[in-house]
Image 1 (cartoon, rainbow, N blue to C red):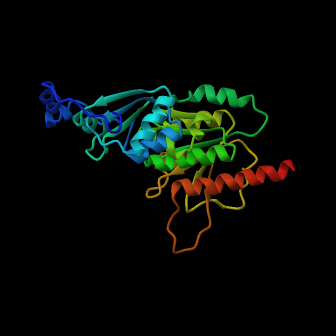
Image 2 (image 1 turned 135 degrees about the horizontal axis):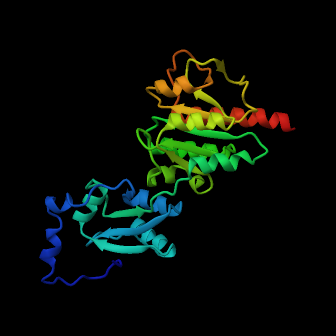
Image 3 (image 1 turned 30 degrees about the horizontal axis):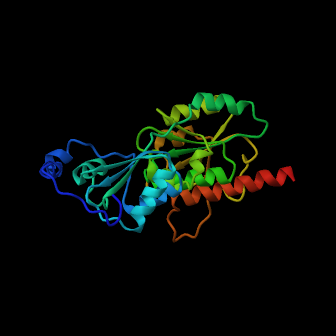
Length: 279
């Protein structure tokens, strides 16, 4: 494991080689909770993504990034295991892991019903952000980061057809995922209906809107903003449940904005409108 340390070949070596056979790789399913590659692992450790263990391949070349990864893992009291490349192939679903992977802990989602109950006691208008078909974990992480920056109360994601809080999403959030509640719901439309009963207005983002920024008549109300995918936009049932569709004015030759960029623009405007009233 240490640079320059010589390894003694033994009769056990052939057994370790057996773990590289394709059939052994298939025994371990690719994990969405594993960050692979030297730079991604170091960045995840620097961001203090909650992790369980660091896996390092046998006989891997120890460079500066590997040294830093092991040092950071040790400082965070993580288990460091030496495993065969076959195990890493199976865990990460790729052979391009560069001999290292960080296994992160399952994300602890907030319960949506409990979240609504807690927000009822707040004196300020609520602000929830929901994702409808946003499948890129980097977009999810960036949206979480913007939501925390502009004082949203939580981000809500459905269990299916939307990115989950994996290591990539956590890293993209730049640590905001540790400060902002994130709820995963079985049915997004049902969460909209529950929020309506709790006094929230449902606002969908779409290029063809009832209102356009900077004007937004519901800024001072409790609102649940729904962000659709960059390509398909809002799903039909979600759109039909919305009380208002809000758009961002753009030049005619630009079809759409990245989901995380659009969310940041809208959240900034909401924050500005609310701040103007409290001044």
